[in-house]
Length: 450
Length: 190
Picture 1 (tube, chains in turn red, cyan):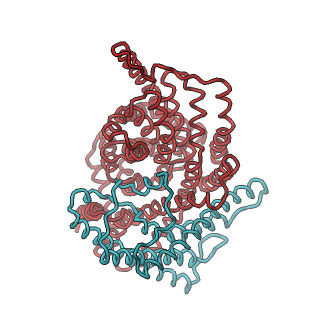
Picture 2: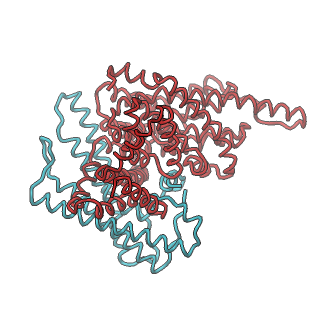
Picture 3: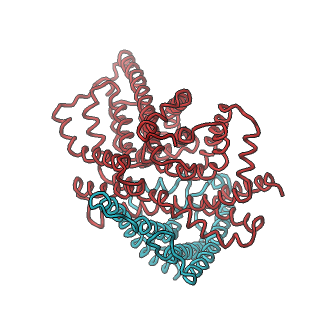
């Protein structure tokens, strides 16, 4: 049987088992084992456990549970609320400042916690009620938080980036650095939109008032005293120091990415113990349990995805698919567009971890052949997966928002996030036209194009 | 849709460490006890791995002492904790899947679908645990170690992997038996 036929059967079997509702990890593992039985030497079955262990025992991959631990420690403490309150005190007098505060708070928290849904939940819990109280429309408020939360998978330390670094065999340090300017670019784009949209909502409230004399909280700008602004700083500064400290440890050459993850987790625990008095076993247990549940689920998917990719490679499925794509002789931008659409569609069904590990062996060789920089593509792919997090019908963050603000209808949330999807697309186009926005920082700081 | 665990972790209500069986069999109660114990051990292992990696940075840069064992200890702890917690996650039905069919199919067909999914997943885990024990036995007989200068024995992580996958297989078995006793309601998709 030709690799193409085997590949089609492999894809169909994967689709069937995944759509059956089996856990993604065991569906991938089962497909791999079934194809080993039929198409590979019998002895290969004896090596599956060793393969999975060897892939999972990568110290880079094992930084994932520790980054999740750091995120859980911060996410389950009042750190997000304090960060939000402090930024709000500094910026709420600016027109649209409250919305922009939410974008900034999401970006900062994402950089500390590294998780998109955790950011969405932590900032949204305080941010959405506050914005609605100040007269923001429900869809607008929901859109800001859903989109702001997606920065969690782009800004370092990002679990998505760690997996991409392993799958594409790229330097994790370079990838983390490469994501910083695109992350800030998205923050700027989101903030500009929020300012513009606020002005529209404000103008609407003024017109409504003139017509009906009906008041709106939007018409009463909020002020904060300088004392109020200073008051919040002591609680937030330690976390900013943690963020900077982790970055210095990583890029100052003091610690490897996995050591940075361990160090970050320990520092996060020290901070929540000192600042919020969260140190008793009963208080720490939910943080550790939530981390174990989420990281176990993720690591099982990662381990089985790697076994799945190994079988795909052994049976020459990935190579044949890659050769087929190269053989189409598409122009490099058409190729990129097609692969971006593929990732976007997969994002409707699969979490980013599976998308990266399953597609990397197929899509990276053609991209390399088309002379795309794989660090640059890692950032583009992550932005596409960010879009998947808020793209209807199944964007994860849409459901996180629904979870924390059940009275906002799904259609309001969906319409609220749509402009942000357009902004991400614009951001992606800017990175395509100006790749230096991605590559300049790692090239400048790491002095290597590696 | 495929992220139910991540969503549930974010809710304001804390989940119990392991779900307490309702009208459970002796196997359910046994797994409840074992999963609770294993979860506590894994949480400790996770904390120790973070401390070990922090220690590694401190001794290398402050005390100028070379580090050789820290990465491997962290790997063993994290791999062990991951595999051992597989059953605990499955007890919450926390291994995420794509639940598109659930909304389309009738409740009766969904019941059968869930059983088939559990059976296939359980069979895979059973096969994986059998192969893991074989690998572990081989590592003990041949005295296999890692390739580092420290060279700890490989039977340690292999046995943790085998034990975790065996526990997971038993968890699936318990859920299949529970299906026959009381038809379960499929978990809601995210």
